[in-house]
Image (spheres, rainbow, N blue to C red):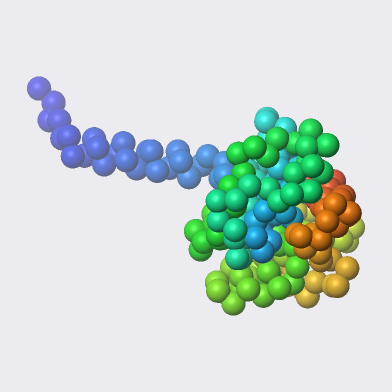
Length: 196
């Protein structure tokens, strides 16, 4: 009868399992960040999901640097998203955590203040943090076959004033419309670049 070593077998199975999981495609996650997580970052998350569709391997999430924790989408923003057929009914604003930055391939913020806050809290993730408007602008500089994540991770240049998306919160319907249109425009540049 052959010698059977359960410990050895379990060791080989664990090793094979680890190798298989390391060969699997890593989860691709984009995190959008604004202040309260009820207007700009929430809009970016739900518009991105709508743009890629359910078959995409990308995951989109959002958080705030000073989140209105547990709140839904802000008034006026909700109407702008609804008019585009976007389902945001499950939104609950949440405060960003270190783990969010660890798990994200890229963190796209709305203003330089968000970038500065995140880098102040977690400087080790600086290369992951950029303005959404900055990524849309830099897309024009990137070559046709350049990987978007790798390209953005290599760019630490300061964003321009034009890269920011102003906070529409409590500024009325027109400010909400302008913000959502700008986010929609920038995503129309960024999302196709990310691919499926």
